[in-house]
Image (tube, rainbow, N blue to C red; front, side):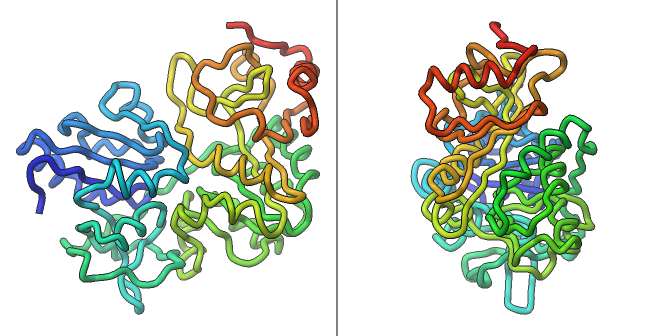
Length: 381
């Protein structure tokens, strides 16, 4: 099935097909010219040896790829996540997709992530799959075309369980300010992590959840009676508790749906709640890393921020502590490239409060941000 020079895409997320990694390594070592296409990996998958491939690229640098990106064995492409389907249909179109699937009464479906994989399969990209006997299925789409899929076997590999530290009092303070700005019934985008958990915990009114990465906090939100309908997401990220809750629900959709700016900006008010590594005096956001280390990728940050600024009564929020490890997060010059431009930032929220930047000139925004950071000041290096 694998031939010389192939570009092979590996399905991403917590359900990436780990049982197929040894065969991929052997094929890469044998051929010497295989190219690897990756997506968002939240866990450092050491079973896949990126160095064996002639070229390894990712459309999103997830937490699990930090070491590989730092080492240069995987290179991130410059693209927002909404552009991934276009890239993978054109310039980076793979010859083969390897994925984990589940068998349902309706047929084969994707388990804990749909992302860009469904589009490739439906476009006729050859697919080699392993069927998981333990994964849940939250795929909202129809059964996949089985004539496009070669089933290589079955596995008991369960989706990775991803956990995060509990929110700190500072995170909770930030999110108390932010939650007050969310209209009742709004569509809310919130990412996994300490701030995301604190934000969902701070909500006191019902919302719709509309996120790329769906965090485990939605389980508690649902239990509190504050979740309207089913969430919309491209990936599940959590523990077995979340995967059990999500099983059988129509949650997961392709990126072509989840990250579509037209969909995001129309309908009920859309609120994007995101964080930053740094924000500069102009209000531009860096989410990719510090000068010393990669943190993540552009991902859907820019998509959701742009969608929220265009949404009637919506809001693009950036939530960030004024300091990190004793250093100000407000900088004169970003350590890396701009991930999200200043015009797609409506409100900045810190532990000191919320600053609404809408309608301000650039000079007014710079003054407002400096006031917001107060004693932390603007970092010059």
